Structure formats: C-alpha cells, structure tokens
Image (cartoon, rainbow, N blue to C red; front, side, top):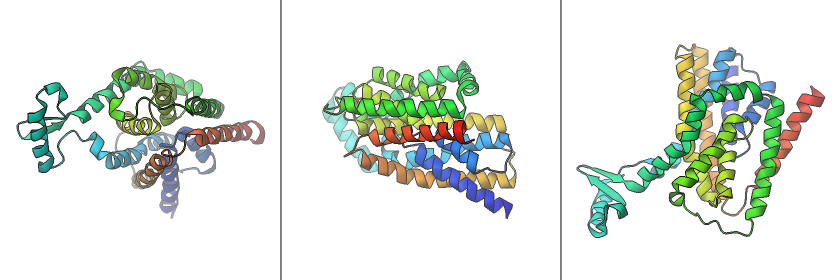
Length: 302
C-alpha cells in the first residue's frame, strides 16, 4: 500500500515535470511548491536523484517527436536513392544535402544542427567543470530567489514580445540559426543554470527571440538543446548515486519517468500549435503570478 501511494505521488511529479519542463514557466519553481505539499517518503539523496533523472522521460518525448530533425542518417533506402541523385546534380560538396559514404548516407543539415547544439552547450560545460553550478545551487536554490527569477523573467517575456510585436523575425527556420547565435543562446542558457526558477527553456527562448529567431525555430531549438543538457545532468546524478536502488525506489523513479514522457508529448505538441497564432506573453503573466504566490506563501503564510 505504501509503495502504491508513493508511485501515485511520483506520477504527479512526472505530470508536473512534463508540463513545466517545456512550457517556459520553470520546472524548479513548481517542483519546490509541489514538494511542500506532496512529500515523497524517500531519502533526501534519492529525492535529489529523482528530481533530475525524471527528466529522462521528458527527453525521450523530444527524441520521439523530433526524430526527423535529430537522426543524421538516411531514414530509408528510397531517401538514399534521392540523396545520390541530388549529389550528382549539386556538384559542390558544400552544397550537398547528403553525403554518401559507402553504405551510409549522412544527412548534412542534421549534422550541422548537432554541431550548433554542441556549440550552444559549451558555456554550460565550462560552467559545470568549474563547479559553478554547485555554488549557485547553494546560494540561490531557495524559494525567495526562485520567486524573484520567476517574476523577473516573466516581465522579460512580456517586454521582449512587446518589442517584437510588429517585427518579422529574420530567422524563420532552425537550420538558419548561425553559430554566432548559438553561442549567445548558450550564454542565455547559463542564466537558468545559475538562477533556479529562471527556466532553461524560458532563458533560451528569450535569448533566441532577442537575436531575431522566430518563436517556432526558438522553441524547436530549445527542445533539441535539452537532449544533451538534461541527459548529461541525469547521467551525472546516476553516477553519483549509483544504481543500487530498492524496489520502491525503482517503482517511484520509473513511474515518474513514464508519466513525464506521456505528458511531455502532449505539452510539446500543444506549445508548437499554440505559438503559431499566439505569443509567449501569457506565460510571462503566469510566471509573475506564480512568483507572487511563492513569495506570499513563504513570507506571509508560513
């Protein structure tokens, strides 16, 4: 009975993770609130692991939905035949969409996109190697700092969208984002690493919008950028904790991951459809409201 109750709690955590990881509203802020009202009866060490590794379910949703954008090889023999024909016509290697290397047909735009993703990850890699992530967690991982980050970036979303209201984004497609832009987006991602409550997706989307990337391209790039970032964080946690989990811990972890995956699929599809006709301001207002609620709870009501 105890295990079933903990599994149901884990499913709730997975639902919240699947919603808040992809909408630019801060999964950290919501997890802090949820943890205050729904306590998992697990060790503090396992809880730290759970809150990070649960992201693997969310990552799997991105892999499934964006497989065509992340898989670097020809998906079928018919695509390989098309590739061979295009190569004969293009002449120049630099203009080729495909490289045929013996039995393997490589999709060059996907390879280039992955190179851009790596470039965007470089600031975060340096940040972690220097140990600055742990320092920032000690300094800023508390309800007040999270609430302030929620409000500040909520205001930022509203200001950026108002600034871009009558403008046409010069970069409409993810493949047109330059390497220089990637570095800037990677630096914005550091804000989320440094200040809990900022939202990784929120920081990268704001950065992309500011440098002229369309909402659709910014969102797609943010989703794919999450794969190495969140996978790396999850693997580091697993290496620290190890795989020596109890039956209850395995049940809790897998339940959270599965629910995070299922909800993430729905949320990502929703967001991509929503931004075709709407901007991100509603999420800015939501962040401000949530930040105020967190401040009121921890300052006045507690």
